Length: 115
Length: 108
Image 1 (cartoon, rainbow over the protein chains, first blue to last red):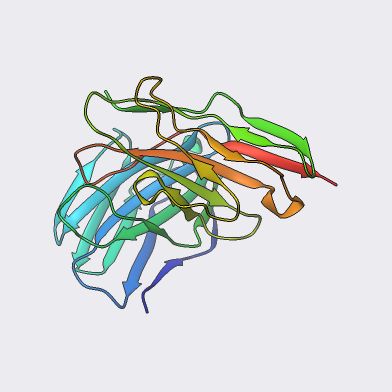
Image 2 (spheres, rainbow over the protein chains, first blue to last red; image 1 turned 45 degrees about the vertical axis):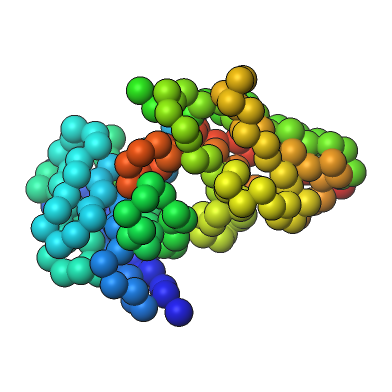
């Protein structure tokens, strides 16, 4: 069966420090991968998505970036964190069907607090 | 532009009462619509999609293209229905557009 992992589960980082959040998927190949930020009152905001290795689409301009070095690995990064980057980050995957959205499966999330 | 609106941040009902969580969308084509749910300390997960026309955990949702709505309904709420509910829209791309979510509280 397919599973999705995220780490770390929680992270406290000072302003200006770098960030690296990792997401990996097991049990599937060629998934679509997504990074979301979940904030109270703002719902789920899509940050990045990827339909293949090295293919990244950015939805929201910000100081975050994403990379997909391997088929089932998706990394969210920042060179210098801002206070506004605090939030709950969710990774999700979806079978690539080629026709719209099938169903997205979400990871457990990472709670990031920037101090 | 594709957009999903969930006008209620919080909906509180008593057990046994009917529930309707509102969702309106904006999309010029034929949408695919979903309801996702997040129970306390659990992962966000799919509850139902309009194309399946299923009833899941007693919940149903009908796509009304005239009113551009996809409201989630349940005739008799249970305490275990308390959760965060997100409506989501898929157009002709590989991404979902989520609403801001509605927290449902069901009191005993």
